[in-house]
Image (cartoon, rainbow, N blue to C red; front, top):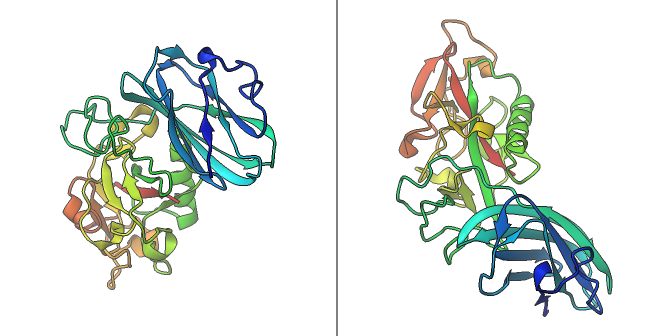
Length: 313
């Protein structure tokens, strides 16, 4: 399948209809956001596949919104997901994603808004696998091995603000995770909590693929991959809460009660299935500051406050 990546608006495409000058099937893309870009990366997955940049070599900076278009084979139809990444001077300035249904020999235009990925470390750690501008490692969007793999994508994880051991139901925690992610403009419509309840193991509650899909923090740091997440130590863990403010959590514990395999610990220490804050009750926790003990680092009384791990589905 051959798809042709066409021009940005200021290079000759119509600013009101990116497909106006194109004969045949066309996917117009209206890119919203703040700031300027000198290059866009467009990724199509689904019934049509494309991974390309426009212009091929970064050009003059252009203020958003701008328009571009993709010329499609006339026979293409079906569901697609479009990811757009904006660049300026080699740095990632935002990312947007939208789904659509392509129709044979049809013109259509999608609106995509670029949102800056939340960051917390300002690039000060000097490592790799980071999306921050000051830390251009080998797996940055500004580099050659982008985290936005067109087939696998990425999966985000973070922690909720700390709370005592009376956590409520797993459904309530899932809702809190999803709402926190939406408030922080993280992609994806569903996030789930990583806490072992007596009738539910995290490994059975969350969906992970047997692939190398990357699990990352909101800063872009690599935590693990889907196929290694429940297998032992991770590379980074997420002491991040209040995602709107990019604030780091005050404590370093997260309520867990599960082993590194994602299964509930045999002898439950779970604040009476996460409903109890009596002085004599205890719950197991993992360390958000120690990748080797992220899932289990000991027990503490249920009146203490610990975070909740969340992961994108």
